[in-house]
Length: 113
Length: 116
Image (cartoon, rainbow over all chains, first blue to last red; front, side, top):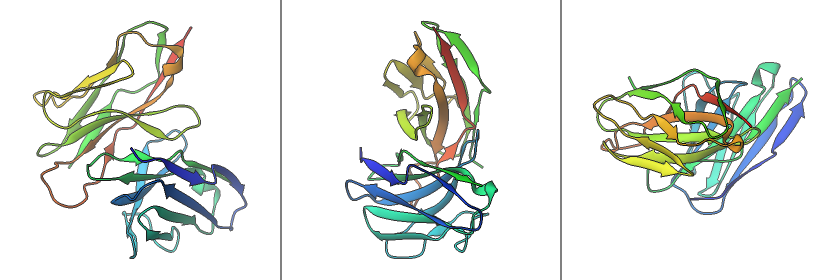
């Protein structure tokens, strides 16, 4: 399986600011995704990061709040914009190759004060 | 629609006890089924998977059998260790026969606490 890294691993931010999270994979992958895991909850899909085009967002998530880039087949970023305490979560990227199995990165733990 | 139901936790066991975490699903067609584990402070790791009926996924002493007749994929381990303490997520990927991306559907997670 692919090795996935995320930066930063954790951060504490002030409300109203923005944070960009990076996801790097050690091999080319077909699809990349971004999830949010609120405290004590399961995972919620934010969007599918499409290489070279706009991301596909799930219901309840918008590009202005969570802009996503995917310039190539191994890298993607998620920005959490104009943060509020409700954005405090773990943000995870995941990838798939030739099968429907998703592999997850270690996550970014965000606390918004 | 597609959904996954897991038993609520926490599940509290003593070391070397037998573990079962129940998972049932609702889906059309032939989904793939997964168990992921999240250790404290970490991301999700794929524990095991099964892609068709009667398949048994296994890894690190954990097993789960894809039961289409009962729409279940229960996770079992014969003898748990303290290091197995984590949150376990059951998930499905809708029918592989469909084209295009099929969103992974997660259960709510079950926390396992193993004491010495």
